[in-house]
Image 1 (cartoon, rainbow over the protein chains, first blue to last red):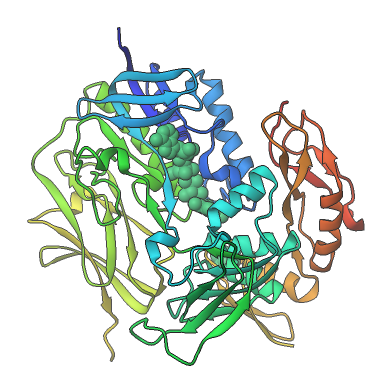
Image 2 (image 1 turned 180 degrees about the horizontal axis):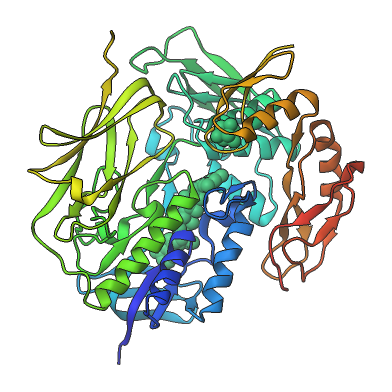
Length: 419
Length: 115
Ligand SMILES: Cc1cc2nc3c(=O)[nH]c(=O)nc-3n(C[C@H](O)[C@H](O)[C@H](O)COP(=O)(O)OP(=O)(O)OC[C@H]3O[C@@H](n4cnc5c(N)ncnc54)[C@H](O)[C@@H]3O)c2cc1C
Ligand code: SF4
């Protein structure tokens, strides 16, 4: 006989644990978390730096400290956790297939929360010209080796991409005795937080080359050197600007992508985030299947990941208890001028009580702009922003009652009019 | 001497300006002003790292200084971090190195490792 479960949570990172806790507290007891690694916590296990939980716990914690608080809550409730269990497929009727050291397993789930996090873009996905020697690895992989296994991947390092993971690794490897020769960023601005530029690069005198990219990877078998070049306004390398660095390691910190394969494979509609389309309950277009955290859209702050997890867990409980009917007349959202994406993809206005959190990212940095929320032509809300950047997710809470009219709800940037 | 700084206290990263009389502008909250004054008089950083650990599953244990330590003590502190090895069980907050680099501040574990 096939095993059945009220709720299967796929991924035991911060999003998955938060979902489990909330669903349990709302009355769902028949839960299992399937986690492919040997411990709970996800990416936070390797984020040994501090800076987590300022909003959620009002104190500054390291990644492992933050995740431990959630592990304790999961254990307190006696929620079942299957470790080393890698989910390989979900079907449209919510059958979950996984493999573990004990063999393959199949669970018939009444509802599912997908919380599988994100993966890093790799060398192949960005197409660096030149050889393919060893020594070119993603920053997150290097972070995993160093922080969970105690293995330093190189001694002379260059970093491509100024995302936070790359910046944090620049500091970490420097402290471990490696020499970090520089960070190259294709765009004219950094994708990392200012605080990380300060405390990870400037503190250690590591140069940041904006509007630069790696144009050559040199080395047979093992990486020996790289060459960077300045790029022009259309991001094309400018001949004659090449600089060579002799390095044994090139770290790539060039972006994260939701790890949404399980739903992708069965054709659940996706949004511009590369995660699934969800409504404000975090429910995908498949009834009773919810998505939250980095698999839905890449977050920079774990605090929001946890909030989303709690939301997904509560919604799964409501679904299981018959309190989450789906309606056809939803308000769709859409990314307007200057905006990259909007989450959720749609809002159910059937029950127009309460508030809905709208999250979005801008495409490029802007100064002195208004963020406008419009339904059709009608202005719902307008907020002034002295500065807004792609590396920080924006979040705003709108009254559902204010969302009347013919959709979609468009979020766009409007330049401040000059008087 | 006046200085421009980036606040590192929270992810917002405000651009701060501090003048010779220690007047701070640009901070969105009081913690930024405190940070700027500290940074120009006695700059400090919380050090996070790992120490060797003879665990079944974990061969390293993450650690942090319980409070920020003077910036110029970070490097000598790392020498001490690299020299120790611990045995499980270890719990969050357990002192791994007392008075690291003579700062008066302890290095503590940031993960529970039972075995
Ligand atoms: C390297 C890095 C550094 C960060 N630094 C900070 C920071 O300084 N401050 C901050 O606030 N936030 C930071 N963040 C953001 C935030 O911490 C993360 O976004 C958050 O922890 C993600 O949680 P998650 O649960 O969505 O994903 P994860 O933590 O990635 O969890 C996903 C889990 O799903 C499991 N999984 C995946 N696929 C399967 C499968 N098929 N079957 C079973 N299990 C599966 C994985 O093993 C993993 O445990 C950082 C993020 C990254 C990637
Ligand atoms: S001044 Fe306040 S809000 Fe601004 S970065 Fe510092 S701590 Fe954060």
